[in-house]
Structures are given as structure tokens and as C-alpha cells.
Image (tube, rainbow over all chains, first blue to last red; front, side):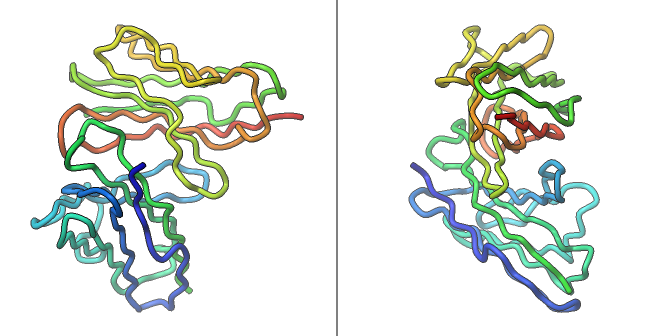
Length: 117
Length: 115
């Protein structure tokens, strides 16, 4: 089956630093990837839609300058949390749409737990 | 805008019994898909079952089945013969048909299974 690899699985960083999270589709091409954020015991909230070769589309209320998304190839999207603060501590999860079967269910990465100290 | 509503935050079921998780949604689209995802403590998102809106027949996957009421915009999940491993958070989700379409999730429900 289709696999999405997300790294790192856990990261701890100091306040004010930047952190990059990678989302890779291993055996399929993904023109579209989605980035979600999840607080404990809450639902997944869409942050942005990432399209290969173009600018990401951010949901209302998400700071695009703080959460930089790059989708430079058909298999890789990255989310960079810039100047991280403790309130950015959360679980971030990506999902990818298969270029060849876009009506198939999205494929999810295993998520990244970010802790900002 | 599409919305997905899960009004029950928590449910509990006795092992081997049956439980039904409720979900309603709102959309003006005719081409869409509905999903139930399971999220165990590992936080991995596991697809449980999927329903295409154009199909009248309710989807089933082993012990999991749905009751899809299109006119009422209701999509409930029935878990039969509940097992301890079914304990998790369950999310109902909606996705419009076509490319570049996002998943919209409900708030989720925490299911516990009593031995």
C-alpha cells in the first residue's frame, strides 16, 4: 500500500528556533499534500494545502510566515515552524493525495510531536 | 462550507458487545466521500471504512459497518463484537470528490472498551 513517511517523529526545540518537518510519499506521486495540527484529545485542524510547484493555500487564521510550507517535488513537502514558541507545541500530521487516484483515501504520515521549551 | 458533527465526546462499550458512533454532516455537493478513522494512542490515523455518496449500499469491513442516510446527512459507525483493541479516538470525516480536496474532520469520539 501507499506509504507516507514523516520525519522527525518527535522533536524538542528551544523557543525562538526553527524546526523543519518532512513529509514524503514513498511509492506514489503526490501533487497535493495537506498539513494538519492536532492538540491533545482534539480533532485534526487543517493548516494548509500544499501543491507541488506552487504556493501553499493556508486556512484562515494560520500565519503563513510562521508556518512555511514548501512542496518542491512530487514526493516531498516540508513544513517549517519559524521562531517557534511554546504555544506551537502540538502534533503535526501530513497527508498526501495520490496523483493517479485522487478519489482514493488520503494517505497519512505518522505525525510529528513538537515540543518547544 | 462543509461541516462534520460528532456530538458524543465519549462512549463506552462492553467487550463483545455492539456500539454505534454517530455522525452528521452538511454539504451542498453531490459528489463526496465519507470516512471513519481510528486514532489509537500512537496517534496514527487508520482508515476504518469509506462510503461513496453515490452508493446506496452501506459499506462494511468485517466487524465495522455504517448506516449511511443520505437524505438525513447521517453517517454512523457500528462496531460489532467489540474488542479491547478497538479502544481509540474515532473521527468521522468528509471529502468532496475530485482532486485537491481536503478532509474535514468531526471533533472525534473517545471509545473505551470494558473487559
